[in-house]
Length: 102
Image (cartoon, rainbow, N blue to C red; front, side, top):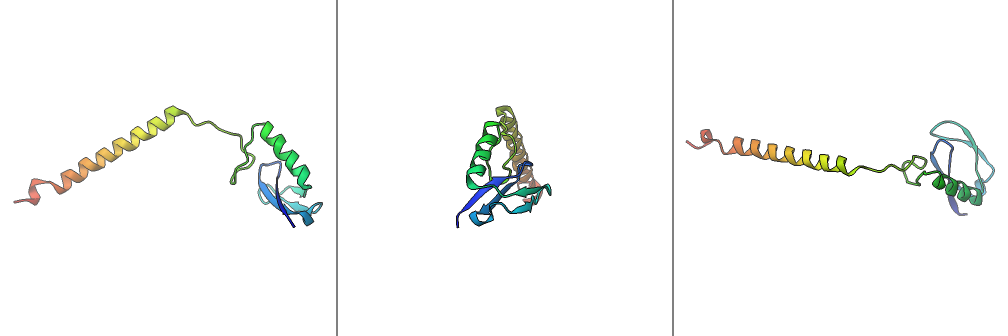
């Protein structure tokens, strides 16, 4: 009783056992009716989806691969750095104020 994975045409990743081949079920994501493929058909389907640019991930099987830009990451690091400096200056002002030390 081995388990294999297959996907709906909406991209939802599903799992089935060998004894479930040929059964009809509905996709929990889109509601389409599906017939559970054989493990070999599921493997062919997976390779076809990868050829089309889809990536097999745990959460989103059928989503196209996306490339994150280096500029976006640099901007994020700079913004977080500036926020950290601003919080540091604020804390220094609050706790090292002359009013606290008469």
